Amino acid sequence: MKKVIIKNLAGVQTHGAEMEDPAAWIAECEAQGVWGAAGEYTVEIIDISAEHALQQTLAARKAEYPSAEEFLNAFFDGGDEALEALRQRRLAIKAKYPKE
Image (cartoon, rainbow, N blue to C red; front, top):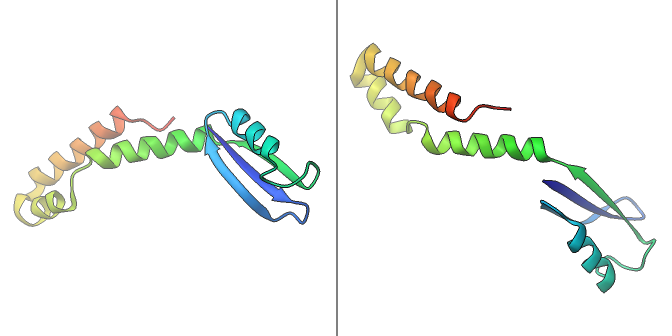
């Protein structure tokens, strides 16, 4: 995943995008003069693959984690066994979606 930052000559970001391969988008925008004439802007491309992968991992974990309601029920009504079951469930989810 790449992050594209377009800045004017004053260094102010005017446009940006995140995408897998920005080459075609950049070429199209330059051809159409979207950012102005050549030399009036800079294009910076940053590889955000690791950050993107981490966000996907965290989103996948969050989707499977026990809900707040499940926690509250276990905490107030389930006792130590119920809390340990939730803890084990969370650990299994973390193992399923490890941070790399």
